[in-house]
Length: 135
Image (tube, rainbow, N blue to C red):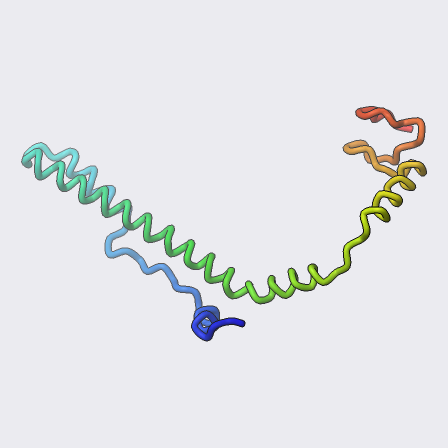
């Protein structure tokens, strides 16, 4: 059972990331300009650089959070279909281990295993691990 609030969220379009008031490139150029200033108080300079660094960090965090929000929103929209696929997979009957073992033994006896990385069938005389000689 899906709650109505969840259904409303799934139906809503994913939120877009709004552009920041000041682009990161401009903040970085202002940071460089402030760093090169020699005619301001060192305390003011340090605080200004810290504020610019914080602004850059917060903008980057907001961008990554918005991106992750969009990804999660898309996952939420596709979740019902993925659940149906998983439920159908769970309803499939399991093959009894005895049948799997018997089939594997039969294929082994018939030499129908493919040697990993060799691309040809094993013959009864090629049973040594790592023997990839072409027949």
